[in-house]
Length: 285
Image (tube, rainbow, N blue to C red; front, side, top):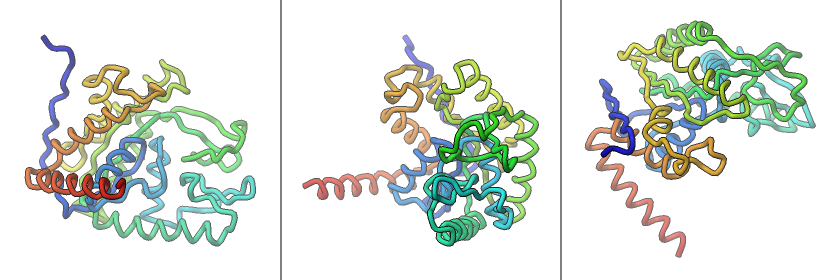
């Protein structure tokens, strides 16, 4: 008897090695896999601008990475004694404007250099709902605790996502012809939007990604299906019943490794994992 639906390990035309630079942008999957790969000493840059949830904000940082002049006054705001960026996570906020801008400019530079040489770019969409800051008419990555009356919530359309990313993919391939892009949809449920609304949001993201993938240079990894179908039980969730729990994250890491890593890479991964456990054991003594 079968008591769960096992998602078949996806087959790709490439494999990831320890020599490959890897950039991850977007929602929680990028954070989890980025942490996993960093811990195991891969050449990885994960969410350099902070966790991003909606396709527009992810697109904005890609555009600004390619052309930092696009980070205009429109995206900068002074609130509650801090300079904040509507393109960045709140960790970039600073009381001093010069330090605020210097930190961001350095990150643009570092990320652009990485993007130009990376072999793989993973993009994780979290939600199709966006927030527009009315005063500046910009879609924000983070509201920075500014009163919600200053924002307009809206749902981005499939054709808008496809158009935005078709243009970005072309630009990415111009600056880095060898880049491969892997899209994922975060399985984290955004129940603050509503149960039905969350399902609609995820469906829009899936449909957009389906139009973008070509299985030659643009691919899809089923992170959403792994949690929602394979691990279809609340024991695999965290206490909030929306985010994946520790077991689910570890299982996702295993599937990711089986999908993308060669046998040689997996053997090295096991060696490094043993070293990490030994080092952590020594620190605890």
